Image (cartoon, rainbow, N blue to C red; front, side):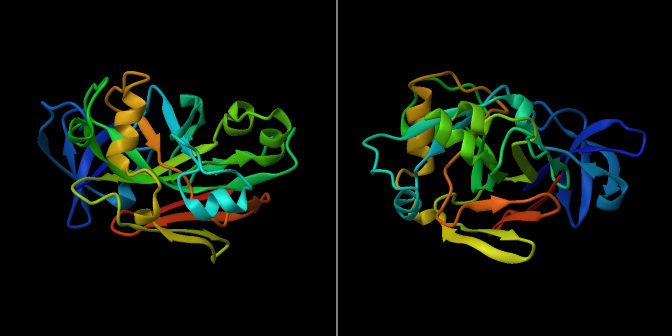
Length: 252
């Protein structure tokens, strides 16, 4: 199932799921277990797709592909490396990524995003898997020069617009065997498969839950494969993940 958050022509925000290329509208947020369909259908060209969720936090995993660790000259971590992006980073499909004036290098990072569906804390891997609502595409945009300058990742990862996600959330798929690519102006720059994760999804979510409570709508970024590189204003960047779709943004 593909779940969407959208704005209609009356500038009203709604929720629904896609069926036969149309949106079946729901009466409330799809993360609410009591949500149900109403007798309204919309075509995709009648709406603007928004970031599919508004997370309270975005938890990111660094260094989760061996070849990316090698290209960044890091050592294999003993445990998952986690950091956070503020919710103010989040934008949706087709929205513009803003190039910060204080940065001289902004990089793309294609990632699989996990959307949390229930409140979880201190859970096992099995419980973590049950707490996941679904999956979407993400771009962990990074001001690489500031990341290296600071020696830690907060500033370089946290600019407004630095977390595009979307275009929808897909449920009932295996997150640990998905082709993932990034296209820069139509050229493939990153290409891998999530089977190359060092730490698989349920283990990551369980690990994070030992640190903090995850609530419905929170997003976990699972790390980027090798091939990261710079973007410049005017570039179009696409994250595409098999069985999910394409997340398309431009850099302004």
